[in-house]
Length: 247
Image (cartoon, rainbow, N blue to C red; front, side):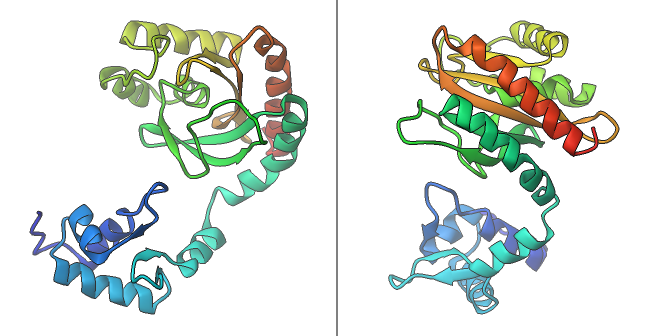
């Protein structure tokens, strides 16, 4: 356990909030303390204050979860809201055509963060979720974002260990570099079986006012011969969204 005697209250609070995950949205104070590296008494005191302000909430079984007030504040000030709101009509149009998953992702650190996802019953397997993340090299959205990122970000991704999900996942810097060049040349990413053998990811860049890539619009469809027909649908929607954003 860390002993951050000189650490600010804000830093400790952030570590408490980061202890929660989509798979475990409710935790005991002891679990929060362990995950945040704080003493139980310290974690308990901060949790109590956060609950009082509505930033955390308590269930009837005394477990703690993120509070509605936190969601309200984040939603009110989020810079991604206008992007998501503008993207939804285009995503709806793509979803009507493909009938599987349609996603909107942005670059955040060394990962792709998914802001929105539309799905339907019986859709092909998909590991992503809203507010979920994937490494840049394994997903079509990530490859699009990485291909149009700064040289520093590219080099960090190429130098980092490449997590392998399937036999088709890019596993070497040489293959990843080749894929990024291909994405820039063709204007889209086509990733059959990169995350799951049965799933195909296709993504195209979303551009802002000055032409910079700010997001990726993607679909996850069955990994079969019908996938190529989806490419124009994704590219057309991404271009339409770019125009709506002034790109």
